[in-house]
Amino acid sequence: MTPDQILPTYDRVAAAWDKARDRTLFERRYLDRFLSHVPGPGSGPRRILDLGCGSGRPIASYLADRRAAVTGVDGSAEMIRLFKANVPAARAVHADMRGLDLGQRFDGILAWNSFFHLSPDDQRAMFAVFAAHAAPRAALMFTAHPRAGEPVGAVEGEPVYHASLDPPEYRALLQAEGFELRDYVPEAQDCRGHTIYLARLR
Image (cartoon, rainbow, N blue to C red):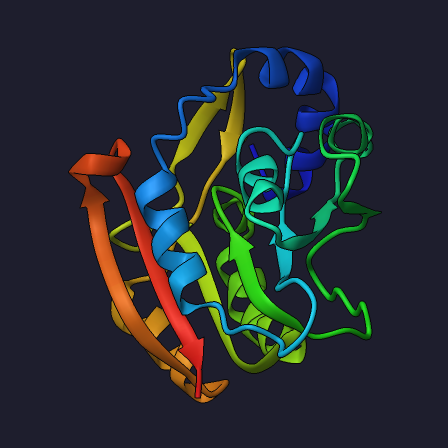
């Protein structure tokens, strides 16, 4: 299993994944914490970039219900097709997050259970992508693992690649791009073991 197999895998399992995806919003506490750090743009809704948005349920739907203007980006064509149907008020972009250049800045950037499918080197390069899409004082939240490694997980019975850097390296990458780490929660017991990073552009 390699990172390049991730998008074809999600294309194959998209419908089953969407049907099985837990929609109880066990992530709500951390989504609300993220939103509390997202600055208002002055007028109009807050602009949120959801990287690796999947089918949009439940996270993008939750953000849209809180009057955020959501742009969902996913490299899986099938996931974007579902996203358009599930979150019709949102903007949907079929694109690989690696090297993304939307020419737009956002008040909040979210990469929940998506960024960690990239290789370690691609993850390092993503911090410049985050910064290029971050408006002043933008919030950034992503999930990773609590220690460096390249484990293989599974989605709908198919193997999927994961990777993580060590927490000190994530902190250094954030700092190099002008982000201040506001919260780090390893293996959060109130979020089914997710490891969560929350930062804000200085």
